[in-house]
Image (tube, rainbow, N blue to C red; front, side):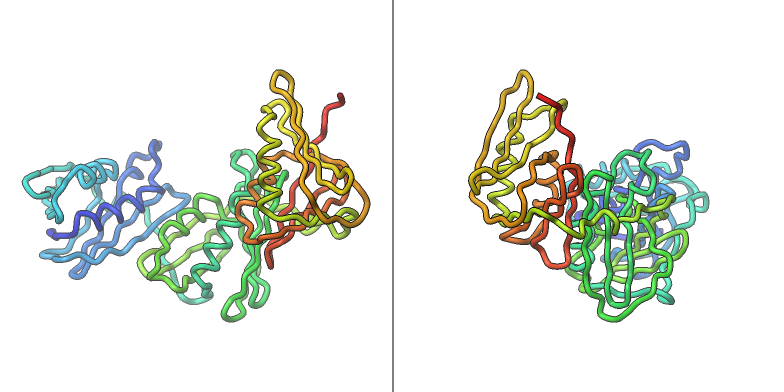
Length: 367
């Protein structure tokens, strides 16, 4: 087996697929990348048994095809430290020679037949979505999912299809983001999956400007995304996703209208004088002004006022500023409505079309 390829292109491809390779594993075989070489290119495969990537790379010259299994960290190191524009890869019985200019490396390889199988995409039952719409869904919802491994179904984002509407929902029980986009044509997904964050971030990472559209295939155990060069398969998160519709406030006695950046700035200022023990910003209305305040022992206290428009009754409540700022950061809107339903009930921030952000209040200590 022998081929020649651009060093930079091969480095980019190996680096991309290496993001799913576990740094440590009880199965050392998973710390490898598999290269399937045919007359016109190389297909790279990597997996941690939860997320799998198949990435296609066209190469300059293939003398002979073959099948390789190489340690991904060694291959990345060689490609990153070399300065040659091209590299030549040539395999023998159980080793691989990599030549980059005047540098020569011999890597011991393993049996590619021992590498786990990786799911393949099939068109039947799949549906298409605009690349940027899919990216938007991921960016605006995945941040709200739980990072703690013990949260089970909270560790992923729920995907729903209703006719020509595709929706993603992420929540950790303290904040929630819901985004909806429109599909080119109606699709059917009978059992909405919960996709792990690592799978979603890998899907987003492989997308490029070459992909105006991507296709998704959903079954009971996995979701597979196919773009022009790549396929990403991810197992689903187990467990029952919460009934998120019940969390969205239907009635909000207090509705505050304010510039998004002004609200974000006020929360950032108030957050300065908080600490981990007192991560709360109080919010109320005084003399027609929005008042945010914070207080923490051995730190100090703050009071920030911003002009607003509001309607309804005055409600005093408090929020973790980090959660509010996370939602505002991804929201495409110049002006937002901060809608409060009660002192101890969820608040809703509106502003972007087809996007809902919910944040739970925090309980203030007395005094």
